[in-house]
Image (cartoon, rainbow, N blue to C red; front, side):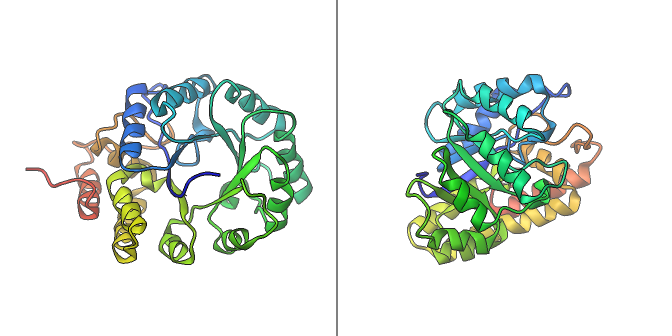
Length: 299
């Protein structure tokens, strides 16, 4: 079972050709681990799994494994829009000490039967541990409690990431789940409420650009200081809302660059804030990160 704490959905630093910037990814990984991350998710939603060039998938996995160096568990997105393409990714992951994370296919809508065939096909035979990712906004299909209980009975499934507060509560209270199946909560707006309820594992992409503040949050909660932990969450959420107002992808890239992680962290069709040409927007991101306590003001 995954240990308690926070799990960061990493960003994926790319150059203008869409190729991985290995040094930037390593620096990003180190920053998260140094601030107390219990584990990392590579190429999740914030890591742009659906936008990564096919020839970059394995290099990103390989660099992620090298950067983590066994210090924390590494989960890797492996979903795709067909069983054949998803299995091809799982085949790549068999070479590495990682777990695979799967959403339902995200292009076509589907009924429950199609979704379950997809997830069960992933679990055939031996291979890496698997984690479900309940993300109906992307996948266009909600994973329900009965689905989780049925899939959790398969040996390779070890957990689920969900932002559904009702589902996470039911899973934590369930007596039917096997002992090594881990529910992880991913609705950042409700992290404080979840912690108060006794849910001790959280995962989000916004953690990627707030490693210091997220570490502060987790350390406060670990010592029983709910007020300080909640205050840190609130600072992150305020900054996130400001970033969304600017455009999440260019603001996310600006935030990551301000932390010293080079490259673009958004899809290649999204604009990137230029510190000179987009001084106002870039300055707003800086101010948001300063107000969150993530970076200091320039001397």
